[in-house]
Structure formats: structure tokens, C-alpha cells
Length: 309
Image 1 (cartoon, one colour):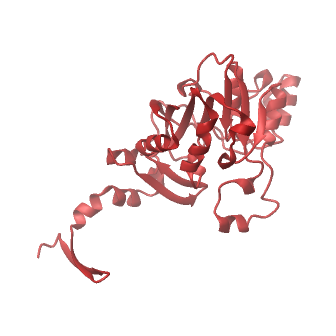
Image 2 (cartoon, one colour; image 1 turned 135 degrees about the vertical axis):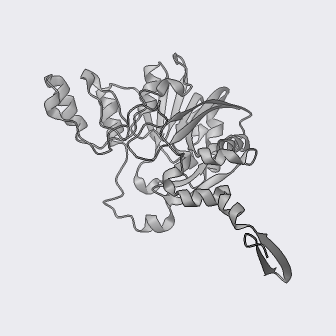
Image 3 (tube, one colour; image 1 turned 60 degrees about the vertical axis):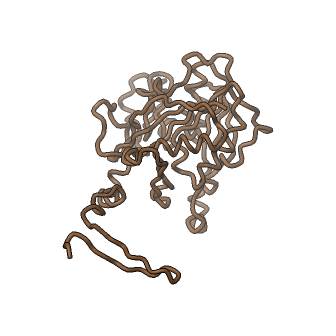
């Protein structure tokens, strides 16, 4: 018998099957390589050389001694009162010490440079970077997010162990940024699964970024988003994908994490496109692929797609 080939017999519901297993081919298969690679390669091998510098770690604080202007120091003091996810530019040159920094790549996400007269929705706004950016471009903006962490899409067993202290309300950073930027963005509290055009209306631009990976049922979320897009409007969706999964070609595949570090799954770009089609979108185009700039050693690649009804 060839040492590189293993023969096995299995019985399934009374049906006996013979299996030919070639260990070398099995070890070379994509699932096996992904399993051996560990989580460091879930989003790709290396950080692209063109990627901007990583954002500071979430929870970092500004050095108040670096602000000579009393007005800037006063804003920095208030910024230090909350934890930041997004890097946001505040008045007097103060930038929040966020975990994710979209500033250098924001023009690659497909947003119109001039959004005057447009109505826009930012789904899962968090600290509000994209909501405030669309407002800066002239749009009338509504920002949506869950009201508290217990409303996040987390496993039931994890939810049962959530203490009242851990179940804090969301929006503290958004609220402070809204005040300091004298913003008119309206914040609406809702799960993505409960979005309703009767309550929110419809929008010229619906923007979704870095949300689907945190959802148990991203397909249902896209189906709830679809009615919010005007017939002549568009959804801009920017989500992480796993470059290794692109090797499956015309097969839509998804890598399941099992809620590892708040991540349920990462799709291939074909999976995301197929999900958009199932949700009802018919005209789908890829805008770009780009790195996420954030404070973490694992590189993350994102794909931006524009989808129209």
C-alpha cells in the first residue's frame, strides 16, 4: 500500500463507504492551512506597506501638557473623560485617542464629496466618525446604534453572565463629540434587526462599516437595511474580508469564528456580494479594497461595495 494514501471504511445509516485519504493533499487544502495558520492569518498575512501608521490603543489618554492653548487643553481634558473607538478631530487641533483611525482612508470609501441635499444614515455609528464626516460633506444625517451593550448580538450564555456594571449605556463619546462639533446629527437607538422605514424614513445614502462581522445573522441585517434605501439611493458597505477565502473562486464561503473577540464570522467578497443580492440589491459594484488602520497586530483587509435597489 502506498504510504501516502490511507483507506478507510465508514458506515452511514447502513451504507458502507470506502474513503481514499491522501494526507499530503489534505494538509495542503485551504481549510487545513487556515487551521494551522492560527488567528493571526484570519485577515491576511501582512500589513500592506502603504497602510498608514496604526491608531493609538483604545483607552489611551491625551497628554494634557502637550496643549499650550488653554482652549485646546480644556477640550483635551473633556476628551480624556471617555473611552474612544474612533479618532475624531475636535476643535483647536485636538484629536481623540481612538482605536480606529479612518482619516487617511476616508476618501476611498465611495462617499460623494458633496452631499448637500442628501439624507444619510450611519448604521452602528459608535463614536460617530462616519456620521460626522457625512454631515461635514453637507448631508442631513441620522446615526443609529444600540442603546446598551446587552443589546449587542452576543451569545445567550454570555448575555446571562453580563453584570449590571458591564451593561453600560453606549453613546458617551458620540454625545461629547456631538457637543464639541456643534453637530446636528440625530442619534436614534435601535438594533439593526429592528430598523424600520416607518420610523426612520428612507435615505439617499445608507452607510455601514465594520458591522456584519459582529452579527449572528448578517443576512437578516441586510434585509432590514434594504427598505431604508431610496429607489434611486445606495448602500455603501465596508466590511472586513479574509483574502485567503478568495481562493475558492466562484464558491461563496465564510469563516466562522464562534464569537471570538466579538466576531461571529468573516466572509469572502463573493459571500458579501451574494448576501447583498439575497437582500434585494440588484446593482452591486466593488469600490475598493483597503487596510483598516487600527491598533492591533493582526492586519485587516476591507472591501467597500456600493449596492443599489
